[in-house]
Amino acid sequence: MANSYTQIHLQFVFAVKYRNAVIAHTWETDLYKYITGIVQNNKHKLIAINGMPDHIHILVGFHTTQSIADLMRDIKANSSKWINENNFTKEKFEWQTGYGAFSYSKSHVQNVINYIYNQKQHHTKQSFLDEYIALLKKFEIEHNIEYSFKELL
Image (cartoon, rainbow, N blue to C red; front, side, top):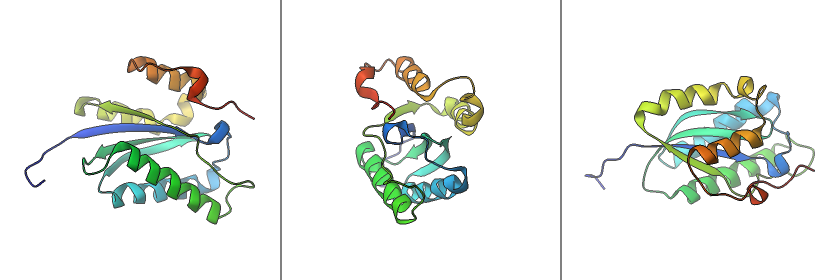
């Protein structure tokens, strides 16, 4: 692969199971650092990470030696294991099944970075579910919202 050149920017969006708001401010930075390590260990470049108590956004410079599905499996499996081993939540922590993956050109990367870093401000005006549906529509991704996320408990 020495002569293969790529520039792929992907935003990943994924939620806590049932969209429970359990990612606490006291450990969210450590979670972001842990996920950054997973991304980097898989030879990708983490560009931005941020979220809310019920979901996370990640912008990655994606390396083509791994599939998107495998990276998301690694992130979600290893981070949930880490959260549970550290007893950060009262009940067993799990990520929601599935994720969103959206690609961007280099010219849009700074806007996506700004969007990710302004999540807390953004969500004073729009719910996560509305945000996610808007992303799916923007990228013209066919979806059935009934299957997008399990309902809140």
